[in-house]
Amino acid sequence: MTWASRAVPAVAAAVAALAARDLLQRDHALLRNFPVLGRARYLLEAIGPELRQYIVAGNNEERPFTRDQRRWVYASAKGQNNYFGFGTDNDIEFTPGYPIIKHRTFGRAVPPSAPGAGHGVRLPCAKVLGGARGRARAFRPESVVNISGMSFGSLSGNAVEALNRGAALAGCLQNTGEGGLSPYHRKGGDLVFQIGTAYFGCRDEHGRFSLERLRDLVAGAPVRALEIKLSQGAKPSLGGLLPGAKVSAEIAATRGIPRGRDCVSPSRHAEFSDCDSLLDWVELLAAETGLPVGIKSAVGDLGFWEELTTLMRDTGRGVDFVTIDGGEGGTGAAPLIFTDSVSLPFQQGFARVYRIFAERDLHEQVVFVGAGKLGLPDNAVVAFALGCDLVNVGREAMLAIGCIQAQKCHTDTCPTGVATQNAWLARGLDPASKSVRAANYVRTLRRDLMKVAEACGVEHPGLISTDAVEVLDGRTASTPLREVYGYRPEWGLPSPADQAEIVRLMTAEAPQGDSAPPSPTAVG
Ligand SMILES: Cc1cc2nc3c(=O)[nH]c(=O)nc-3n(C[C@H](O)[C@H](O)[C@H](O)COP(=O)(O)O)c2cc1C
Ligand code: SF4
Image (cartoon, rainbow, N blue to C red; front, side, top):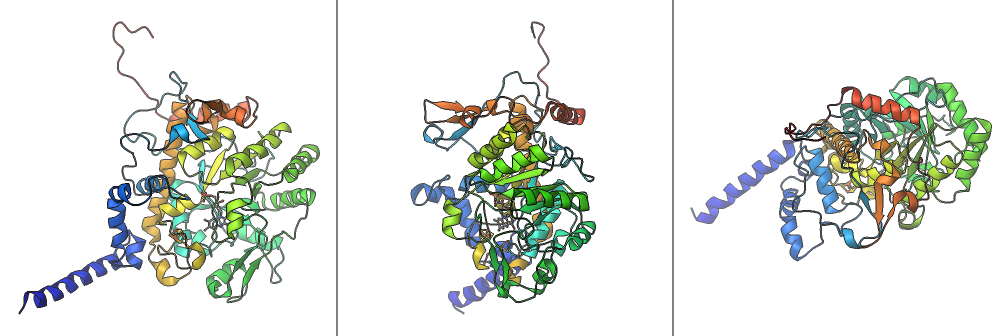
Protein backbone atom coordinates (compact mmCIF):
# COMPACT_ATOMS: atom_id res chain seq x y z
CA MET A 1 0.00 0.00 0.00
CA THR A 2 1.42 3.36 -1.01
CA TRP A 3 1.72 6.28 1.38
CA ALA A 4 -0.95 8.18 -0.56
CA SER A 5 -3.46 5.32 -0.49
CA ARG A 6 -3.11 5.12 3.29
CA ALA A 7 -3.29 8.91 3.79
CA VAL A 8 -6.40 9.61 1.70
CA PRO A 9 -8.85 7.46 3.73
CA ALA A 10 -7.30 8.76 6.96
CA VAL A 11 -7.78 12.37 5.89
CA ALA A 12 -11.32 11.63 4.68
CA ALA A 13 -12.13 10.00 8.03
CA ALA A 14 -10.71 12.97 9.90
CA VAL A 15 -12.75 15.42 7.80
CA ALA A 16 -15.88 13.32 8.29
CA ALA A 17 -15.31 13.26 12.04
CA LEU A 18 -14.76 17.01 12.07
CA ALA A 19 -17.91 17.54 9.99
CA ALA A 20 -19.93 15.37 12.39
CA ARG A 21 -18.56 17.29 15.35
CA ASP A 22 -19.40 20.63 13.69
CA LEU A 23 -22.91 19.47 12.85
CA LEU A 24 -23.66 18.30 16.35
CA GLN A 25 -22.17 21.13 18.39
CA ARG A 26 -24.45 24.05 19.37
CA ASP A 27 -22.11 26.92 20.08
CA HIS A 28 -21.43 28.10 16.53
CA ALA A 29 -24.34 28.41 14.08
CA LEU A 30 -21.94 28.93 11.19
CA LEU A 31 -20.28 25.56 11.81
CA ARG A 32 -23.62 23.80 12.22
CA ASN A 33 -24.73 25.21 8.87
CA PHE A 34 -21.39 24.91 7.06
CA PRO A 35 -19.48 22.05 8.72
CA VAL A 36 -15.67 22.21 8.22
CA LEU A 37 -15.94 25.06 5.65
CA GLY A 38 -17.09 27.47 8.33
CA ARG A 39 -13.80 26.93 10.17
CA ALA A 40 -12.05 29.08 7.58
CA ARG A 41 -13.91 32.07 8.98
CA TYR A 42 -12.69 31.41 12.51
CA LEU A 43 -9.15 30.90 11.25
CA LEU A 44 -9.28 34.17 9.34
CA GLU A 45 -10.73 35.91 12.38
CA ALA A 46 -7.88 34.60 14.51
CA ILE A 47 -5.10 35.66 12.17
CA GLY A 48 -7.02 38.64 10.80
CA PRO A 49 -5.15 41.37 12.70
CA GLU A 50 -1.82 40.17 11.33
CA LEU A 51 -3.17 39.74 7.78
CA ARG A 52 -4.94 43.08 7.75
CA GLN A 53 -1.81 44.94 8.67
CA TYR A 54 -0.54 44.03 5.24
CA ILE A 55 -3.47 43.59 2.92
CA VAL A 56 -6.96 44.44 4.01
CA ALA A 57 -8.88 46.98 6.11
CA GLY A 58 -8.03 48.46 9.50
CA ASN A 59 -9.82 47.81 12.78
CA ASN A 60 -12.03 50.86 12.36
CA GLU A 61 -12.81 50.76 8.68
CA GLU A 62 -15.72 48.38 8.26
CA ARG A 63 -19.35 49.47 8.44
CA PRO A 64 -21.93 49.51 9.87
CA PHE A 65 -19.95 47.99 12.73
CA THR A 66 -16.18 48.13 12.71
CA ARG A 67 -14.09 45.11 13.47
CA ASP A 68 -13.24 46.50 16.91
CA GLN A 69 -16.90 47.09 17.70
CA ARG A 70 -17.86 43.60 16.60
CA ARG A 71 -14.98 42.10 18.52
CA TRP A 72 -16.18 43.90 21.63
CA VAL A 73 -19.75 42.57 21.18
CA TYR A 74 -18.58 39.01 20.45
CA ALA A 75 -16.20 38.90 23.42
CA SER A 76 -18.83 40.42 25.73
CA ALA A 77 -21.46 37.94 24.54
CA LYS A 78 -19.14 34.99 25.09
CA GLY A 79 -18.08 36.24 28.50
CA GLN A 80 -14.50 36.46 27.25
CA ASN A 81 -11.89 39.14 27.89
CA ASN A 82 -13.27 42.19 26.04
CA TYR A 83 -10.43 44.53 26.92
CA PHE A 84 -8.19 46.05 24.23
CA GLY A 85 -4.44 46.35 24.64
CA PHE A 86 -1.88 49.06 23.91
CA GLY A 87 -4.25 52.03 23.75
CA THR A 88 -6.88 53.33 21.36
CA ASP A 89 -6.43 52.94 17.63
CA ASN A 90 -9.23 55.44 16.96
CA ASP A 91 -8.13 58.60 15.20
CA ILE A 92 -9.21 60.80 18.11
CA GLU A 93 -7.23 63.87 17.15
CA PHE A 94 -8.49 64.06 13.59
CA THR A 95 -12.10 62.80 13.72
CA PRO A 96 -14.56 65.71 13.90
CA GLY A 97 -17.49 64.95 16.19
CA TYR A 98 -15.54 62.47 18.33
CA PRO A 99 -17.18 62.48 21.81
CA ILE A 100 -15.02 62.64 24.91
CA ILE A 101 -16.45 61.80 28.32
CA LYS A 102 -15.09 63.91 31.15
CA HIS A 103 -14.44 61.93 34.33
CA ARG A 104 -14.42 63.58 37.76
CA THR A 105 -11.62 63.26 40.25
CA PHE A 106 -13.72 63.47 43.44
CA GLY A 107 -17.13 62.41 42.19
CA ARG A 108 -20.15 61.67 44.38
CA ALA A 109 -20.26 57.98 43.42
CA VAL A 110 -17.26 55.82 44.30
CA PRO A 111 -16.91 52.88 41.93
CA PRO A 112 -16.27 49.46 43.45
CA SER A 113 -12.91 48.30 42.17
CA ALA A 114 -13.02 44.49 42.40
CA PRO A 115 -12.46 42.69 39.07
CA GLY A 116 -15.83 42.12 37.41
CA ALA A 117 -17.50 44.58 39.80
CA GLY A 118 -20.75 45.86 38.42
CA HIS A 119 -21.30 42.93 36.05
CA GLY A 120 -24.54 41.89 37.70
CA VAL A 121 -25.60 45.44 38.43
CA ARG A 122 -29.31 46.25 38.42
CA LEU A 123 -29.73 49.24 36.19
CA PRO A 124 -33.40 50.24 36.13
CA CYS A 125 -34.86 53.18 34.26
CA ALA A 126 -34.72 56.51 36.07
CA LYS A 127 -38.39 57.17 35.22
CA VAL A 128 -41.55 55.13 35.69
CA LEU A 129 -43.01 54.27 32.29
CA GLY A 130 -46.57 55.53 32.21
CA GLY A 131 -46.20 56.99 35.71
CA ALA A 132 -46.60 60.64 34.73
CA ARG A 133 -49.90 59.94 32.99
CA GLY A 134 -51.18 57.57 35.67
CA ARG A 135 -51.56 54.52 33.43
CA ALA A 136 -53.03 51.55 35.28
CA ARG A 137 -50.08 49.30 34.37
CA ALA A 138 -47.30 51.85 34.71
CA PHE A 139 -43.96 50.28 35.70
CA ARG A 140 -40.29 51.06 36.10
CA PRO A 141 -38.36 49.13 33.38
CA GLU A 142 -35.82 46.89 35.08
CA SER A 143 -33.09 47.57 32.55
CA VAL A 144 -31.92 50.70 30.73
CA VAL A 145 -30.81 48.44 27.85
CA ASN A 146 -33.56 46.61 25.97
CA ILE A 147 -33.92 44.68 22.72
CA SER A 148 -35.17 46.66 19.75
CA GLY A 149 -38.09 45.71 17.52
CA MET A 150 -37.12 43.08 14.95
CA SER A 151 -40.05 41.03 13.77
CA PHE A 152 -40.48 37.33 13.38
CA GLY A 153 -40.29 37.18 9.60
CA SER A 154 -37.25 39.37 9.26
CA LEU A 155 -35.58 37.25 11.98
CA SER A 156 -35.85 33.47 12.21
CA GLY A 157 -37.95 31.88 14.94
CA ASN A 158 -34.78 30.60 16.63
CA ALA A 159 -33.27 34.10 16.64
CA VAL A 160 -36.44 35.60 18.14
CA GLU A 161 -36.48 32.84 20.75
CA ALA A 162 -32.79 33.36 21.61
CA LEU A 163 -33.42 37.07 22.11
CA ASN A 164 -36.57 36.46 24.14
CA ARG A 165 -34.87 33.96 26.43
CA GLY A 166 -31.88 36.30 26.62
CA ALA A 167 -34.20 39.13 27.65
CA ALA A 168 -35.61 36.93 30.42
CA LEU A 169 -32.10 36.06 31.65
CA ALA A 170 -30.92 39.68 31.56
CA GLY A 171 -34.16 41.11 32.96
CA CYS A 172 -34.82 43.38 30.01
CA LEU A 173 -37.66 43.95 27.54
CA GLN A 174 -37.89 42.62 24.00
CA ASN A 175 -39.81 44.67 21.43
CA THR A 176 -41.76 42.36 19.09
CA GLY A 177 -41.23 44.48 15.97
CA GLU A 178 -44.19 44.99 13.69
CA GLY A 179 -44.62 41.35 12.61
CA GLY A 180 -46.92 40.33 15.47
CA LEU A 181 -46.40 38.23 18.59
CA SER A 182 -45.16 34.74 17.68
CA PRO A 183 -44.75 31.59 19.79
CA TYR A 184 -41.01 32.41 19.83
CA HIS A 185 -41.81 35.58 21.76
CA ARG A 186 -43.39 33.54 24.52
CA LYS A 187 -40.28 32.05 26.09
CA GLY A 188 -40.19 34.01 29.32
CA GLY A 189 -39.05 37.51 28.31
CA ASP A 190 -41.24 40.56 28.90
CA LEU A 191 -42.42 42.32 25.76
CA VAL A 192 -43.20 45.65 24.20
CA PHE A 193 -45.81 44.94 21.53
CA GLN A 194 -45.24 47.01 18.42
CA ILE A 195 -48.23 48.07 16.31
CA GLY A 196 -47.29 48.77 12.71
CA THR A 197 -49.37 49.97 9.80
CA ALA A 198 -50.58 46.47 8.94
CA TYR A 199 -51.72 45.80 12.54
CA PHE A 200 -50.18 42.33 12.47
CA GLY A 201 -51.34 40.29 15.43
CA CYS A 202 -54.26 42.66 16.14
CA ARG A 203 -56.14 42.83 12.86
CA ASP A 204 -59.36 41.28 11.64
CA GLU A 205 -59.80 39.16 8.56
CA HIS A 206 -60.10 42.29 6.37
CA GLY A 207 -56.81 43.71 7.63
CA ARG A 208 -58.49 46.33 9.84
CA PHE A 209 -57.23 47.09 13.32
CA SER A 210 -59.19 45.15 15.94
CA LEU A 211 -59.25 46.49 19.49
CA GLU A 212 -60.75 43.24 20.70
CA ARG A 213 -57.87 41.22 19.27
CA LEU A 214 -55.35 43.61 20.81
CA ARG A 215 -57.01 43.24 24.21
CA ASP A 216 -56.94 39.43 23.91
CA LEU A 217 -53.34 39.46 22.75
CA VAL A 218 -51.99 41.57 25.62
CA ALA A 219 -54.05 39.61 28.12
CA GLY A 220 -52.43 36.36 26.98
CA ALA A 221 -48.75 37.39 26.91
CA PRO A 222 -46.31 39.31 29.11
CA VAL A 223 -46.81 42.59 27.21
CA ARG A 224 -45.72 45.55 29.36
CA ALA A 225 -46.17 48.42 26.88
CA LEU A 226 -47.47 49.23 23.39
CA GLU A 227 -45.39 51.01 20.75
CA ILE A 228 -47.08 52.55 17.73
CA LYS A 229 -44.61 52.47 14.90
CA LEU A 230 -44.73 55.64 12.82
CA SER A 231 -41.40 55.10 11.09
CA GLN A 232 -38.00 53.48 11.29
CA GLY A 233 -34.68 55.24 10.75
CA ALA A 234 -33.54 53.00 7.93
CA LYS A 235 -36.71 53.36 5.84
CA PRO A 236 -39.04 56.15 6.95
CA SER A 237 -42.29 56.60 5.01
CA LEU A 238 -42.03 53.18 3.42
CA GLY A 239 -44.31 50.22 3.86
CA GLY A 240 -42.95 46.70 3.60
CA LEU A 241 -43.42 43.55 1.59
CA LEU A 242 -42.87 40.00 2.74
CA PRO A 243 -42.93 37.83 -0.40
CA GLY A 244 -45.53 35.04 -0.43
CA ALA A 245 -42.80 32.40 -0.52
CA LYS A 246 -41.68 33.50 2.94
CA VAL A 247 -45.18 33.58 4.38
CA SER A 248 -45.02 30.23 6.15
CA ALA A 249 -47.89 28.79 8.19
CA GLU A 250 -46.26 30.10 11.37
CA ILE A 251 -45.78 33.61 10.00
CA ALA A 252 -49.33 33.62 8.63
CA ALA A 253 -50.72 32.62 12.03
CA THR A 254 -48.59 35.18 13.90
CA ARG A 255 -49.51 38.04 11.61
CA GLY A 256 -53.10 37.05 11.01
CA ILE A 257 -52.71 36.84 7.21
CA PRO A 258 -53.25 34.16 4.54
CA ARG A 259 -50.42 31.69 4.04
CA GLY A 260 -48.29 31.85 0.86
CA ARG A 261 -49.60 35.24 -0.34
CA ASP A 262 -47.51 38.41 -0.57
CA CYS A 263 -47.85 40.33 2.67
CA VAL A 264 -47.92 44.10 2.23
CA SER A 265 -47.49 46.64 5.05
CA PRO A 266 -49.00 49.96 3.99
CA SER A 267 -46.95 53.13 4.37
CA ARG A 268 -49.57 54.90 6.55
CA HIS A 269 -51.77 54.05 9.51
CA ALA A 270 -55.52 53.76 8.92
CA GLU A 271 -56.53 54.50 12.53
CA PHE A 272 -55.26 58.11 12.62
CA SER A 273 -54.25 60.71 10.10
CA ASP A 274 -52.85 63.63 12.11
CA CYS A 275 -51.46 64.47 15.56
CA ASP A 276 -54.88 65.06 17.03
CA SER A 277 -56.30 61.69 15.98
CA LEU A 278 -53.00 60.00 16.91
CA LEU A 279 -53.33 61.30 20.48
CA ASP A 280 -56.95 60.14 20.63
CA TRP A 281 -55.84 56.67 19.56
CA VAL A 282 -53.01 56.62 22.11
CA GLU A 283 -55.48 57.46 24.88
CA LEU A 284 -57.92 54.84 23.64
CA LEU A 285 -55.28 52.08 23.64
CA ALA A 286 -54.01 53.12 27.07
CA ALA A 287 -57.52 53.22 28.54
CA GLU A 288 -58.50 49.85 27.03
CA THR A 289 -55.35 47.97 28.02
CA GLY A 290 -54.02 49.95 30.99
CA LEU A 291 -50.58 49.80 29.35
CA PRO A 292 -48.17 52.66 28.73
CA VAL A 293 -48.33 53.64 25.06
CA GLY A 294 -45.55 55.23 23.01
CA ILE A 295 -44.53 56.01 19.47
CA LYS A 296 -41.46 55.06 17.47
CA SER A 297 -40.24 57.40 14.80
CA ALA A 298 -37.31 58.57 12.77
CA VAL A 299 -36.75 62.32 12.60
CA GLY A 300 -37.12 64.44 9.49
CA ASP A 301 -39.39 67.48 9.26
CA LEU A 302 -40.01 68.88 12.76
CA GLY A 303 -43.56 70.13 12.15
CA PHE A 304 -45.00 66.83 13.40
CA TRP A 305 -43.15 67.08 16.73
CA GLU A 306 -44.10 70.72 17.25
CA GLU A 307 -47.76 70.00 16.68
CA LEU A 308 -47.73 66.85 18.79
CA THR A 309 -46.12 68.52 21.80
CA THR A 310 -48.30 71.62 21.54
CA LEU A 311 -51.38 69.40 21.60
CA MET A 312 -49.97 67.40 24.51
CA ARG A 313 -49.37 70.57 26.48
CA ASP A 314 -52.73 72.17 25.63
CA THR A 315 -55.09 69.19 25.76
CA GLY A 316 -53.65 66.92 28.45
CA ARG A 317 -53.53 63.89 26.14
CA GLY A 318 -50.12 62.37 25.53
CA VAL A 319 -47.72 59.55 24.78
CA ASP A 320 -45.90 57.83 27.62
CA PHE A 321 -42.73 57.24 25.68
CA VAL A 322 -41.02 58.29 22.49
CA THR A 323 -38.56 56.03 20.70
CA ILE A 324 -36.28 57.91 18.33
CA ASP A 325 -34.59 55.77 15.69
CA GLY A 326 -31.52 57.19 13.96
CA GLY A 327 -31.06 57.18 10.19
CA GLU A 328 -28.02 54.95 10.77
CA GLY A 329 -30.36 52.27 12.16
CA GLY A 330 -30.81 48.82 10.68
CA THR A 331 -33.50 47.06 8.68
CA GLY A 332 -34.23 43.64 7.27
CA ALA A 333 -34.48 45.19 3.80
CA ALA A 334 -34.83 48.71 2.34
CA PRO A 335 -33.89 50.70 -0.74
CA LEU A 336 -30.34 52.11 -0.59
CA ILE A 337 -31.39 55.74 -0.90
CA PHE A 338 -33.53 55.37 2.23
CA THR A 339 -30.92 53.59 4.35
CA ASP A 340 -28.24 56.03 3.21
CA SER A 341 -29.98 59.40 3.06
CA VAL A 342 -33.51 59.68 4.47
CA SER A 343 -33.96 60.83 8.13
CA LEU A 344 -31.47 62.37 10.54
CA PRO A 345 -28.78 60.40 12.32
CA PHE A 346 -29.60 59.60 15.94
CA GLN A 347 -27.82 62.38 17.84
CA GLN A 348 -29.11 65.21 15.72
CA GLY A 349 -32.62 63.83 15.37
CA PHE A 350 -32.95 63.01 19.07
CA ALA A 351 -31.61 66.35 20.29
CA ARG A 352 -34.03 68.28 18.06
CA VAL A 353 -37.02 66.30 19.30
CA TYR A 354 -35.95 66.44 22.95
CA ARG A 355 -35.60 70.21 22.72
CA ILE A 356 -39.12 70.55 21.38
CA PHE A 357 -40.48 68.53 24.32
CA ALA A 358 -38.32 70.48 26.80
CA GLU A 359 -39.39 73.87 25.45
CA ARG A 360 -42.97 72.88 26.33
CA ASP A 361 -41.95 71.47 29.73
CA LEU A 362 -42.92 67.93 28.77
CA HIS A 363 -39.48 66.32 28.88
CA GLU A 364 -39.74 65.09 32.47
CA GLN A 365 -43.10 63.41 31.83
CA VAL A 366 -42.03 61.31 28.87
CA VAL A 367 -39.65 58.34 28.80
CA PHE A 368 -37.19 58.82 25.94
CA VAL A 369 -35.87 55.73 24.19
CA GLY A 370 -33.03 55.86 21.68
CA ALA A 371 -31.94 53.48 18.91
CA GLY A 372 -29.28 53.64 16.21
CA LYS A 373 -25.99 51.93 17.10
CA LEU A 374 -26.59 52.67 20.76
CA GLY A 375 -25.53 49.17 21.72
CA LEU A 376 -21.97 50.51 21.78
CA PRO A 377 -21.13 52.10 25.12
CA ASP A 378 -19.67 55.36 23.79
CA ASN A 379 -22.75 56.06 21.66
CA ALA A 380 -25.05 55.06 24.50
CA VAL A 381 -23.35 57.43 26.97
CA VAL A 382 -23.91 60.37 24.63
CA ALA A 383 -27.54 59.29 24.22
CA PHE A 384 -28.06 59.25 28.00
CA ALA A 385 -26.40 62.66 28.32
CA LEU A 386 -28.79 64.04 25.70
CA GLY A 387 -31.79 62.81 27.68
CA CYS A 388 -32.41 59.20 26.73
CA ASP A 389 -33.82 57.13 29.56
CA LEU A 390 -33.51 53.79 27.77
CA VAL A 391 -31.54 52.48 24.80
CA ASN A 392 -32.73 49.78 22.42
CA VAL A 393 -30.23 47.47 20.77
CA GLY A 394 -31.00 45.83 17.44
CA ARG A 395 -28.09 44.71 15.31
CA GLU A 396 -25.71 44.55 18.26
CA ALA A 397 -28.04 41.95 19.79
CA MET A 398 -27.98 40.12 16.44
CA LEU A 399 -24.17 40.14 16.57
CA ALA A 400 -24.36 38.74 20.10
CA ILE A 401 -26.36 35.73 18.87
CA GLY A 402 -24.02 34.99 15.98
CA CYS A 403 -24.55 37.51 13.13
CA ILE A 404 -21.28 38.01 11.25
CA GLN A 405 -22.36 41.16 9.38
CA ALA A 406 -22.59 39.34 6.05
CA GLN A 407 -25.33 41.89 5.16
CA LYS A 408 -27.54 39.40 3.33
CA CYS A 409 -30.53 39.83 5.62
CA HIS A 410 -32.75 40.73 2.65
CA THR A 411 -31.89 37.56 0.67
CA ASP A 412 -33.09 34.80 3.02
CA THR A 413 -29.62 33.23 2.86
CA CYS A 414 -28.26 34.47 6.20
CA PRO A 415 -25.42 32.01 6.88
CA THR A 416 -25.80 32.16 10.67
CA GLY A 417 -29.55 31.50 10.81
CA VAL A 418 -30.33 34.91 12.35
CA ALA A 419 -32.24 36.63 9.55
CA THR A 420 -33.75 33.85 7.46
CA GLN A 421 -36.81 31.63 7.19
CA ASN A 422 -34.74 28.83 5.61
CA ALA A 423 -35.27 25.92 8.00
CA TRP A 424 -31.80 24.44 7.48
CA LEU A 425 -30.00 27.70 8.10
CA ALA A 426 -32.19 28.65 11.06
CA ARG A 427 -31.60 25.24 12.62
CA GLY A 428 -27.93 26.19 13.01
CA LEU A 429 -28.82 28.79 15.61
CA ASP A 430 -29.28 27.13 18.98
CA PRO A 431 -31.64 29.35 21.04
CA ALA A 432 -30.50 27.98 24.40
CA SER A 433 -26.80 28.78 24.06
CA LYS A 434 -27.37 32.00 22.10
CA SER A 435 -29.78 33.30 24.73
CA VAL A 436 -26.94 33.20 27.24
CA ARG A 437 -24.83 35.24 24.84
CA ALA A 438 -27.56 37.82 24.33
CA ALA A 439 -27.91 38.15 28.10
CA ASN A 440 -24.13 38.39 28.62
CA TYR A 441 -23.95 41.14 26.06
CA VAL A 442 -26.79 43.17 27.64
CA ARG A 443 -25.23 42.75 31.09
CA THR A 444 -21.81 43.86 29.82
CA LEU A 445 -23.24 46.96 28.18
CA ARG A 446 -25.04 47.81 31.42
CA ARG A 447 -21.82 47.25 33.37
CA ASP A 448 -19.88 49.57 31.05
CA LEU A 449 -22.57 52.24 31.28
CA MET A 450 -22.51 52.00 35.05
CA LYS A 451 -18.71 52.25 35.13
CA VAL A 452 -18.77 55.36 32.95
CA ALA A 453 -21.50 56.92 35.12
CA GLU A 454 -19.35 56.32 38.19
CA ALA A 455 -16.31 57.76 36.45
CA CYS A 456 -18.41 60.89 35.86
CA GLY A 457 -19.24 60.93 39.58
CA VAL A 458 -22.92 59.92 39.35
CA GLU A 459 -24.85 56.82 40.39
CA HIS A 460 -26.69 56.05 37.16
CA PRO A 461 -26.15 56.69 33.43
CA GLY A 462 -29.37 58.72 33.32
CA LEU A 463 -27.67 61.26 35.59
CA ILE A 464 -24.80 61.92 33.19
CA SER A 465 -25.33 65.50 32.08
CA THR A 466 -24.52 67.20 28.81
CA ASP A 467 -21.66 68.96 30.63
CA ALA A 468 -19.91 65.62 31.07
CA VAL A 469 -19.39 65.21 27.33
CA GLU A 470 -17.38 67.28 24.90
CA VAL A 471 -17.28 66.93 21.15
CA LEU A 472 -13.86 67.20 19.57
CA ASP A 473 -13.24 69.18 16.46
CA GLY A 474 -9.77 68.09 15.52
CA ARG A 475 -6.70 68.30 17.69
CA THR A 476 -7.09 71.77 19.15
CA ALA A 477 -10.80 72.53 19.54
CA SER A 478 -13.81 71.01 21.26
CA THR A 479 -17.34 72.08 22.22
CA PRO A 480 -19.43 70.96 25.22
CA LEU A 481 -22.30 68.71 24.14
CA ARG A 482 -24.72 71.19 25.69
CA GLU A 483 -23.57 73.93 23.34
CA VAL A 484 -23.48 71.68 20.30
CA TYR A 485 -27.18 70.93 20.70
CA GLY A 486 -28.35 74.20 22.32
CA TYR A 487 -29.53 72.59 25.58
CA ARG A 488 -30.33 74.48 28.78
CA PRO A 489 -28.33 73.27 31.83
CA GLU A 490 -31.10 71.13 33.35
CA TRP A 491 -32.10 69.48 30.09
CA GLY A 492 -31.16 65.87 29.51
CA LEU A 493 -31.80 64.93 33.16
CA PRO A 494 -34.87 63.43 34.87
CA SER A 495 -36.94 65.59 37.25
CA PRO A 496 -35.39 66.31 40.69
CA ALA A 497 -37.84 63.82 42.28
CA ASP A 498 -36.91 61.09 39.76
CA GLN A 499 -33.22 61.83 40.29
CA ALA A 500 -33.56 61.45 44.06
CA GLU A 501 -35.44 58.18 43.66
CA ILE A 502 -32.96 56.60 41.25
CA VAL A 503 -30.05 57.59 43.50
CA ARG A 504 -31.88 55.95 46.41
CA LEU A 505 -32.49 52.79 44.38
CA MET A 506 -28.91 52.62 43.13
CA THR A 507 -27.25 53.17 46.48
CA ALA A 508 -29.60 51.09 48.65
CA GLU A 509 -27.89 47.81 47.87
CA ALA A 510 -24.92 48.64 45.63
CA PRO A 511 -21.46 48.17 47.09
CA GLN A 512 -19.44 51.38 47.13
CA GLY A 513 -15.75 51.56 46.29
CA ASP A 514 -12.92 51.98 48.69
CA SER A 515 -9.31 53.11 48.95
CA ALA A 516 -6.17 51.82 50.65
CA PRO A 517 -6.16 52.46 54.43
CA PRO A 518 -5.18 56.09 55.12
CA SER A 519 -1.66 56.76 56.38
CA PRO A 520 -1.15 58.52 59.77
CA THR A 521 -0.41 61.75 57.90
CA ALA A 522 -3.53 61.65 55.68
CA VAL A 523 -5.31 65.03 55.58
CA GLY A 524 -8.66 64.16 53.92
C1 LIG B 1 -33.43 42.72 10.77
C2 LIG B 1 -34.06 43.95 11.33
C3 LIG B 1 -35.45 44.02 11.47
C4 LIG B 1 -36.04 45.17 11.98
N1 LIG B 1 -37.40 45.19 12.15
C5 LIG B 1 -37.98 46.28 12.72
C6 LIG B 1 -39.38 46.30 13.00
O1 LIG B 1 -40.11 45.35 12.77
N2 LIG B 1 -39.88 47.44 13.57
C7 LIG B 1 -39.10 48.51 13.89
O2 LIG B 1 -39.60 49.50 14.41
N3 LIG B 1 -37.77 48.50 13.66
C8 LIG B 1 -37.20 47.42 13.09
N4 LIG B 1 -35.84 47.40 12.91
C9 LIG B 1 -35.04 48.55 13.38
C10 LIG B 1 -34.49 48.31 14.78
O3 LIG B 1 -35.52 48.06 15.72
C11 LIG B 1 -33.65 49.48 15.30
O4 LIG B 1 -34.50 50.58 15.51
C12 LIG B 1 -32.52 49.89 14.38
O5 LIG B 1 -31.89 48.79 13.81
C13 LIG B 1 -31.48 50.72 15.15
O6 LIG B 1 -30.86 49.97 16.16
P1 LIG B 1 -29.42 49.25 15.97
O7 LIG B 1 -28.51 50.26 15.37
O8 LIG B 1 -29.06 48.86 17.37
O9 LIG B 1 -29.63 48.09 15.07
C14 LIG B 1 -35.23 46.26 12.38
C15 LIG B 1 -33.85 46.20 12.23
C16 LIG B 1 -33.26 45.06 11.74
C17 LIG B 1 -31.76 45.00 11.63
S1 SF4 C 1 -27.40 38.03 6.74
FE1 SF4 C 1 -25.45 38.64 7.59
S2 SF4 C 1 -25.85 40.63 8.52
FE2 SF4 C 1 -27.84 39.67 8.19
S3 SF4 C 1 -28.21 38.61 10.14
FE3 SF4 C 1 -27.26 37.14 8.79
S4 SF4 C 1 -25.09 37.24 9.32
FE4 SF4 C 1 -26.07 39.09 10.11
